[in-house]
Image 1 (cartoon, helix red, strand yellow):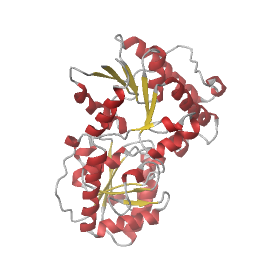
Image 2: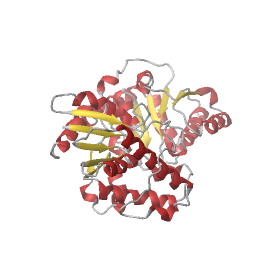
Image 3: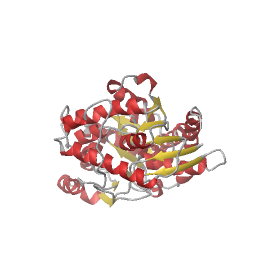
Image 4: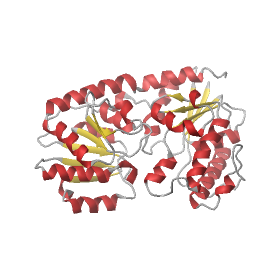
Length: 374
Protein backbone atom coordinates (compact mmCIF):
# COMPACT_ATOMS: atom_id res chain seq x y z
CA UNK A 1 0.00 0.00 0.00
CA UNK A 2 1.30 3.42 -0.98
CA UNK A 3 0.60 5.94 1.79
CA UNK A 4 0.99 9.69 1.94
CA UNK A 5 1.20 11.47 5.28
CA UNK A 6 0.14 15.05 4.50
CA UNK A 7 1.40 17.52 7.11
CA UNK A 8 1.09 21.28 7.24
CA UNK A 9 4.35 22.25 8.94
CA UNK A 10 7.60 20.61 7.87
CA UNK A 11 8.22 17.68 10.23
CA UNK A 12 11.05 19.43 12.10
CA UNK A 13 8.59 21.99 13.49
CA UNK A 14 7.58 21.54 17.17
CA UNK A 15 4.28 19.93 18.06
CA UNK A 16 2.46 16.64 18.46
CA UNK A 17 2.55 15.71 14.77
CA UNK A 18 6.31 16.13 14.62
CA UNK A 19 6.62 13.96 17.71
CA UNK A 20 5.14 11.02 15.85
CA UNK A 21 4.86 11.09 12.06
CA UNK A 22 8.55 11.31 11.05
CA UNK A 23 9.37 8.41 13.39
CA UNK A 24 6.63 6.27 11.85
CA UNK A 25 8.33 6.19 8.49
CA UNK A 26 10.81 3.42 9.30
CA UNK A 27 7.89 1.25 10.52
CA UNK A 28 6.40 1.43 7.03
CA UNK A 29 9.51 0.65 4.99
CA UNK A 30 8.57 -2.92 4.19
CA UNK A 31 7.52 -4.66 0.94
CA UNK A 32 3.91 -4.33 2.07
CA UNK A 33 4.07 -0.61 2.85
CA UNK A 34 5.46 2.48 1.18
CA UNK A 35 5.04 5.80 2.97
CA UNK A 36 5.94 9.37 1.98
CA UNK A 37 5.72 12.64 3.91
CA UNK A 38 4.54 15.90 2.39
CA UNK A 39 4.34 19.43 3.79
CA UNK A 40 4.27 23.08 2.76
CA UNK A 41 7.66 24.82 3.06
CA UNK A 42 7.62 28.06 5.02
CA UNK A 43 9.03 29.97 2.05
CA UNK A 44 5.90 29.30 -0.04
CA UNK A 45 3.74 32.42 0.27
CA UNK A 46 1.07 33.88 -2.04
CA UNK A 47 1.68 31.46 -4.90
CA UNK A 48 -1.81 30.01 -5.20
CA UNK A 49 -4.43 31.75 -7.31
CA UNK A 50 -7.13 29.08 -7.54
CA UNK A 51 -10.75 29.92 -6.78
CA UNK A 52 -11.83 28.28 -3.53
CA UNK A 53 -15.20 26.67 -2.95
CA UNK A 54 -16.36 24.40 -0.15
CA UNK A 55 -19.30 22.03 -0.46
CA UNK A 56 -20.89 22.54 2.96
CA UNK A 57 -20.69 26.33 3.43
CA UNK A 58 -19.92 29.60 1.64
CA UNK A 59 -16.62 30.90 2.97
CA UNK A 60 -17.08 34.26 1.24
CA UNK A 61 -19.50 35.24 4.02
CA UNK A 62 -16.36 35.69 6.13
CA UNK A 63 -14.03 37.09 3.48
CA UNK A 64 -13.75 40.55 5.08
CA UNK A 65 -11.69 39.06 7.89
CA UNK A 66 -7.88 39.24 7.43
CA UNK A 67 -7.56 36.00 9.44
CA UNK A 68 -9.92 34.19 7.06
CA UNK A 69 -8.20 35.69 4.02
CA UNK A 70 -4.83 34.44 5.29
CA UNK A 71 -6.26 30.96 5.91
CA UNK A 72 -7.74 30.81 2.40
CA UNK A 73 -4.49 32.04 0.82
CA UNK A 74 -2.55 29.37 2.71
CA UNK A 75 -5.02 26.80 1.39
CA UNK A 76 -4.44 28.11 -2.15
CA UNK A 77 -0.68 27.88 -1.61
CA UNK A 78 -0.98 24.30 -0.39
CA UNK A 79 -3.05 23.44 -3.47
CA UNK A 80 -0.44 25.05 -5.73
CA UNK A 81 2.42 23.21 -4.04
CA UNK A 82 0.58 19.86 -4.10
CA UNK A 83 -0.13 20.09 -7.83
CA UNK A 84 3.46 21.14 -8.50
CA UNK A 85 5.19 18.46 -6.43
CA UNK A 86 3.10 15.29 -6.30
CA UNK A 87 3.28 13.36 -9.53
CA UNK A 88 2.54 9.79 -8.50
CA UNK A 89 -0.77 8.39 -7.22
CA UNK A 90 -1.29 7.02 -3.70
CA UNK A 91 -3.64 4.35 -2.40
CA UNK A 92 -4.46 6.32 0.74
CA UNK A 93 -3.81 9.81 2.10
CA UNK A 94 -3.66 10.55 5.82
CA UNK A 95 -3.79 14.30 6.50
CA UNK A 96 -2.81 15.91 9.80
CA UNK A 97 -4.06 19.46 9.27
CA UNK A 98 -7.39 20.70 7.86
CA UNK A 99 -5.70 22.65 5.06
CA UNK A 100 -3.68 19.57 4.07
CA UNK A 101 -6.73 17.32 4.01
CA UNK A 102 -8.96 19.68 2.04
CA UNK A 103 -6.22 20.39 -0.49
CA UNK A 104 -5.44 16.70 -0.99
CA UNK A 105 -9.10 15.85 -1.52
CA UNK A 106 -9.37 18.63 -4.09
CA UNK A 107 -6.35 17.40 -6.06
CA UNK A 108 -7.05 13.67 -5.57
CA UNK A 109 -10.85 13.37 -5.21
CA UNK A 110 -10.87 9.60 -5.81
CA UNK A 111 -8.20 8.76 -3.22
CA UNK A 112 -9.52 7.82 0.25
CA UNK A 113 -8.70 10.45 2.86
CA UNK A 114 -8.19 9.89 6.58
CA UNK A 115 -8.18 13.19 8.45
CA UNK A 116 -6.71 13.57 11.94
CA UNK A 117 -7.58 16.79 13.75
CA UNK A 118 -4.79 17.34 16.26
CA UNK A 119 -5.80 20.64 17.82
CA UNK A 120 -8.24 23.53 17.81
CA UNK A 121 -6.89 26.52 15.90
CA UNK A 122 -9.94 28.63 16.73
CA UNK A 123 -9.63 27.97 20.47
CA UNK A 124 -5.94 28.86 20.38
CA UNK A 125 -6.69 32.12 18.55
CA UNK A 126 -9.37 33.04 21.09
CA UNK A 127 -7.12 32.28 24.08
CA UNK A 128 -4.28 34.21 22.46
CA UNK A 129 -6.54 37.23 21.97
CA UNK A 130 -6.45 37.10 18.17
CA UNK A 131 -10.17 36.56 17.49
CA UNK A 132 -13.47 36.89 19.35
CA UNK A 133 -15.78 34.08 20.41
CA UNK A 134 -18.65 33.75 17.88
CA UNK A 135 -16.97 36.28 15.60
CA UNK A 136 -16.66 35.65 11.84
CA UNK A 137 -13.26 33.96 12.16
CA UNK A 138 -14.58 31.65 14.87
CA UNK A 139 -17.62 30.68 12.79
CA UNK A 140 -15.48 30.11 9.71
CA UNK A 141 -13.06 27.80 11.52
CA UNK A 142 -15.88 25.83 13.12
CA UNK A 143 -17.49 25.38 9.69
CA UNK A 144 -14.24 23.79 8.48
CA UNK A 145 -14.94 20.79 10.73
CA UNK A 146 -18.17 20.08 8.87
CA UNK A 147 -16.37 20.35 5.54
CA UNK A 148 -13.70 17.90 6.74
CA UNK A 149 -16.37 15.43 7.82
CA UNK A 150 -18.00 15.74 4.40
CA UNK A 151 -14.76 15.25 2.46
CA UNK A 152 -12.91 12.60 4.49
CA UNK A 153 -13.63 8.88 4.52
CA UNK A 154 -12.54 8.72 8.17
CA UNK A 155 -12.23 11.42 10.82
CA UNK A 156 -9.83 10.94 13.74
CA UNK A 157 -8.64 12.94 16.71
CA UNK A 158 -6.15 12.47 19.54
CA UNK A 159 -8.20 12.36 22.76
CA UNK A 160 -11.71 11.62 24.01
CA UNK A 161 -11.86 15.17 25.32
CA UNK A 162 -11.22 16.64 21.90
CA UNK A 163 -13.74 14.30 20.29
CA UNK A 164 -16.33 15.75 22.67
CA UNK A 165 -15.22 19.24 21.71
CA UNK A 166 -15.78 18.45 18.02
CA UNK A 167 -19.20 16.83 18.53
CA UNK A 168 -21.38 19.95 18.08
CA UNK A 169 -19.71 20.83 14.78
CA UNK A 170 -20.16 17.56 12.87
CA UNK A 171 -23.17 15.46 11.91
CA UNK A 172 -21.93 12.09 13.18
CA UNK A 173 -19.67 12.64 16.20
CA UNK A 174 -19.99 9.01 17.32
CA UNK A 175 -17.98 7.77 14.33
CA UNK A 176 -14.96 9.99 15.05
CA UNK A 177 -12.07 7.69 15.98
CA UNK A 178 -9.51 8.40 18.69
CA UNK A 179 -5.85 7.43 18.22
CA UNK A 180 -3.49 9.28 20.61
CA UNK A 181 -0.10 10.37 19.39
CA UNK A 182 2.63 7.78 19.80
CA UNK A 183 6.23 8.35 20.83
CA UNK A 184 9.38 6.45 19.93
CA UNK A 185 10.84 5.28 23.25
CA UNK A 186 14.34 5.22 21.75
CA UNK A 187 14.32 9.03 21.80
CA UNK A 188 13.95 9.17 25.58
CA UNK A 189 16.80 8.22 27.89
CA UNK A 190 16.00 8.87 31.57
CA UNK A 191 19.14 9.59 33.58
CA UNK A 192 19.46 8.99 37.35
CA UNK A 193 20.37 12.28 38.99
CA UNK A 194 20.11 14.11 42.29
CA UNK A 195 19.69 17.86 41.94
CA UNK A 196 20.35 19.77 45.15
CA UNK A 197 17.80 22.39 44.07
CA UNK A 198 14.55 21.26 42.34
CA UNK A 199 14.69 21.87 38.62
CA UNK A 200 11.35 22.77 37.01
CA UNK A 201 10.96 22.69 33.25
CA UNK A 202 8.28 23.56 30.73
CA UNK A 203 8.38 23.07 26.96
CA UNK A 204 5.90 24.97 24.83
CA UNK A 205 5.30 27.76 22.38
CA UNK A 206 5.27 31.05 24.26
CA UNK A 207 1.68 32.12 23.73
CA UNK A 208 -1.09 33.06 26.22
CA UNK A 209 -2.89 29.73 25.75
CA UNK A 210 -0.09 27.92 27.59
CA UNK A 211 -0.71 29.79 30.85
CA UNK A 212 2.89 30.67 31.62
CA UNK A 213 1.75 33.84 33.38
CA UNK A 214 0.01 31.56 35.89
CA UNK A 215 3.20 29.52 36.26
CA UNK A 216 5.26 32.63 36.95
CA UNK A 217 2.81 33.81 39.62
CA UNK A 218 2.94 30.35 41.22
CA UNK A 219 6.74 30.46 41.21
CA UNK A 220 6.65 33.88 42.85
CA UNK A 221 4.53 32.34 45.61
CA UNK A 222 7.06 29.53 46.03
CA UNK A 223 9.89 32.02 46.31
CA UNK A 224 7.88 34.00 48.83
CA UNK A 225 7.61 30.87 50.96
CA UNK A 226 11.38 30.54 50.94
CA UNK A 227 11.69 27.64 48.47
CA UNK A 228 14.70 27.38 46.16
CA UNK A 229 14.17 26.21 42.58
CA UNK A 230 15.19 26.88 38.99
CA UNK A 231 12.59 27.23 36.23
CA UNK A 232 13.72 26.31 32.71
CA UNK A 233 11.60 27.64 29.80
CA UNK A 234 12.24 25.76 26.54
CA UNK A 235 10.46 27.32 23.59
CA UNK A 236 9.87 30.64 21.91
CA UNK A 237 6.97 32.74 20.78
CA UNK A 238 5.43 36.19 20.52
CA UNK A 239 4.97 36.80 24.26
CA UNK A 240 8.55 36.06 25.30
CA UNK A 241 9.32 39.77 25.97
CA UNK A 242 6.16 40.04 28.06
CA UNK A 243 7.14 36.94 30.06
CA UNK A 244 10.64 38.23 30.66
CA UNK A 245 9.18 41.52 31.91
CA UNK A 246 6.70 39.63 34.13
CA UNK A 247 9.50 37.51 35.61
CA UNK A 248 11.39 40.69 36.49
CA UNK A 249 8.30 42.34 37.97
CA UNK A 250 7.51 39.27 40.11
CA UNK A 251 11.11 39.02 41.30
CA UNK A 252 11.80 35.57 39.81
CA UNK A 253 13.97 36.54 36.83
CA UNK A 254 17.16 35.16 38.45
CA UNK A 255 15.44 31.79 39.00
CA UNK A 256 14.16 31.62 35.40
CA UNK A 257 16.16 30.56 32.34
CA UNK A 258 14.80 31.23 28.82
CA UNK A 259 16.36 28.84 26.29
CA UNK A 260 14.44 29.80 23.18
CA UNK A 261 13.42 27.23 20.58
CA UNK A 262 15.20 23.87 20.84
CA UNK A 263 14.81 21.22 18.16
CA UNK A 264 15.07 18.16 20.45
CA UNK A 265 13.99 19.11 23.99
CA UNK A 266 13.85 15.44 24.97
CA UNK A 267 17.66 15.52 25.06
CA UNK A 268 17.49 18.06 27.91
CA UNK A 269 14.45 16.89 29.87
CA UNK A 270 15.98 13.90 31.70
CA UNK A 271 18.24 16.26 33.68
CA UNK A 272 15.30 18.09 35.26
CA UNK A 273 12.95 16.98 38.05
CA UNK A 274 9.45 18.32 37.46
CA UNK A 275 7.59 19.09 34.24
CA UNK A 276 4.91 21.75 34.64
CA UNK A 277 2.57 23.34 32.09
CA UNK A 278 -0.61 25.16 33.23
CA UNK A 279 -2.30 25.20 29.81
CA UNK A 280 -5.63 26.89 29.31
CA UNK A 281 -6.51 24.32 26.60
CA UNK A 282 -4.90 21.19 25.12
CA UNK A 283 -6.36 18.73 22.63
CA UNK A 284 -3.89 16.10 23.86
CA UNK A 285 -0.72 17.68 25.26
CA UNK A 286 2.03 15.62 23.63
CA UNK A 287 4.72 17.25 25.74
CA UNK A 288 3.30 15.60 28.89
CA UNK A 289 3.85 12.16 27.36
CA UNK A 290 7.36 13.20 26.32
CA UNK A 291 8.12 14.42 29.84
CA UNK A 292 6.72 11.20 31.30
CA UNK A 293 8.97 9.11 29.05
CA UNK A 294 11.86 11.23 30.33
CA UNK A 295 10.81 10.13 33.85
CA UNK A 296 9.81 13.54 35.17
CA UNK A 297 7.07 14.23 37.70
CA UNK A 298 4.11 15.87 35.92
CA UNK A 299 2.05 18.87 37.04
CA UNK A 300 -0.65 20.10 34.69
CA UNK A 301 -4.10 21.64 34.49
CA UNK A 302 -7.39 19.78 34.46
CA UNK A 303 -8.23 20.76 30.87
CA UNK A 304 -8.62 19.02 27.51
CA UNK A 305 -6.64 15.83 27.01
CA UNK A 306 -4.29 16.36 29.97
CA UNK A 307 -6.47 14.46 32.51
CA UNK A 308 -6.47 11.48 30.13
CA UNK A 309 -2.72 11.29 30.69
CA UNK A 310 -2.49 12.37 34.34
CA UNK A 311 -4.41 10.54 37.07
CA UNK A 312 -4.24 13.03 39.91
CA UNK A 313 -2.06 11.79 42.76
CA UNK A 314 -1.15 8.57 40.94
CA UNK A 315 1.15 9.54 38.08
CA UNK A 316 1.13 13.33 38.43
CA UNK A 317 -0.82 16.23 39.86
CA UNK A 318 -3.71 18.15 38.30
CA UNK A 319 -4.78 21.67 39.26
CA UNK A 320 -7.54 23.97 38.02
CA UNK A 321 -6.63 26.35 35.22
CA UNK A 322 -6.11 30.03 36.14
CA UNK A 323 -5.18 29.21 39.76
CA UNK A 324 -1.61 30.21 40.71
CA UNK A 325 -2.05 29.26 44.37
CA UNK A 326 -3.26 25.74 43.56
CA UNK A 327 -0.35 25.36 41.16
CA UNK A 328 2.10 26.56 43.82
CA UNK A 329 0.67 24.03 46.31
CA UNK A 330 1.09 21.18 43.81
CA UNK A 331 4.64 22.18 42.94
CA UNK A 332 5.49 22.50 46.62
CA UNK A 333 4.35 18.92 47.25
CA UNK A 334 6.65 17.43 44.63
CA UNK A 335 9.53 19.80 45.35
CA UNK A 336 9.68 18.98 49.06
CA UNK A 337 9.24 15.19 48.83
CA UNK A 338 11.78 13.57 46.46
CA UNK A 339 10.44 10.06 47.15
CA UNK A 340 6.89 11.10 46.22
CA UNK A 341 8.25 12.89 43.18
CA UNK A 342 10.04 9.74 42.07
CA UNK A 343 6.93 7.58 42.49
CA UNK A 344 4.86 9.99 40.40
CA UNK A 345 7.55 10.07 37.70
CA UNK A 346 7.91 6.27 37.63
CA UNK A 347 4.14 5.77 37.34
CA UNK A 348 3.90 8.41 34.61
CA UNK A 349 6.67 6.74 32.64
CA UNK A 350 5.03 3.31 32.89
CA UNK A 351 1.67 4.67 31.70
CA UNK A 352 3.26 6.54 28.79
CA UNK A 353 5.13 3.42 27.68
CA UNK A 354 1.92 1.39 27.81
CA UNK A 355 -0.57 3.82 26.29
CA UNK A 356 1.48 6.20 24.13
CA UNK A 357 4.15 4.05 22.51
CA UNK A 358 4.84 4.56 18.84
CA UNK A 359 4.36 0.84 18.25
CA UNK A 360 0.83 0.91 19.62
CA UNK A 361 -0.15 3.92 17.50
CA UNK A 362 1.39 2.41 14.38
CA UNK A 363 -0.46 -0.89 14.91
CA UNK A 364 -3.79 0.93 15.29
CA UNK A 365 -3.13 2.97 12.16
CA UNK A 366 -2.10 -0.08 10.15
CA UNK A 367 -5.35 -1.83 11.05
CA UNK A 368 -7.27 1.21 9.90
CA UNK A 369 -5.28 1.63 6.70
CA UNK A 370 -5.93 -2.00 5.74
CA UNK A 371 -9.68 -1.32 5.78
CA UNK A 372 -9.15 0.61 2.55
CA UNK A 373 -8.42 -1.52 -0.54
CA UNK A 374 -5.19 -0.71 -2.34
